[in-house]
Length: 104
Image 1 (tube, one colour):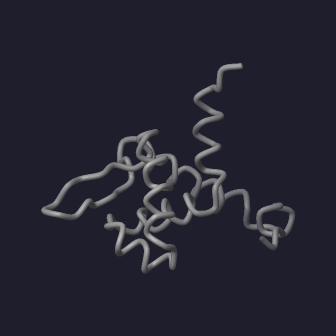
Image 2: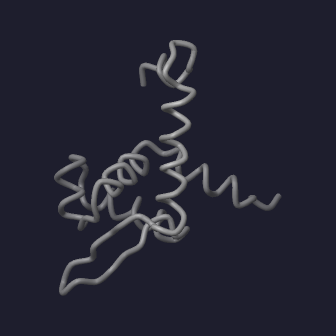
Image 3: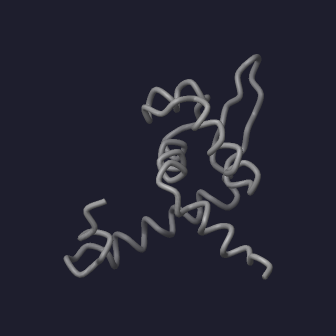
């Protein structure tokens, strides 16, 4: 059975570390070192997660000197996150939303 683009996309977003990375990069681009300190995650684990996000073009990597700076794909990810934020403001501000009741 071939995976659909939806499956691959949402599987990437279903990982807590990858969500933390995306959330951090939504604030501003960052290197692995900065992300590692900010998220309190070892660099090897973070690099692996970034490689998966990069392979699907959810994040972009730019070489600046000896550093690699990661940022969100502005063409697709930023509009998607903006839409999700709008959805959350409009529809998730009540006690019936399961994400608000989840203790994970």
